[in-house]
Length: 166
Image (tube, rainbow, N blue to C red):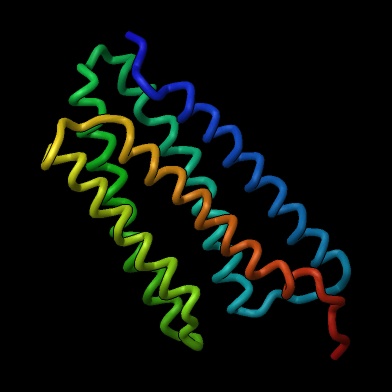
């Protein structure tokens, strides 16, 4: 069965994994210059790498479920529920880790949009307002990648500065 939106999700998976590879190379380059990652750098690094990997994995789940001959309605419901539960768990985890550092408006704004994506996934799971489909799911998966890119851009200045000698 050809699942609507599969091509978009598979393309998003390729873009996401490419982003993760590129951003990891930037961090390794920084370390080869003699820089040491502090705890804040590690939290931000984890945020964009994990977000990118999650965007990849969650882009692959619906096409995988479609291989089991589930109806598209159930593919989107199961995929959205799984996605929402993981995002809730990770949101709680990230907020706890981030609470050790100075609060920034940008991080709060990203978290607010992250919460809206979770709400969209729950709406898609329950079929509230309309039948479950690809739109809200693809939007949430895309947001994960955009979230990772924004975190990377915010951290890029820190990662590319010449290391300070102790």
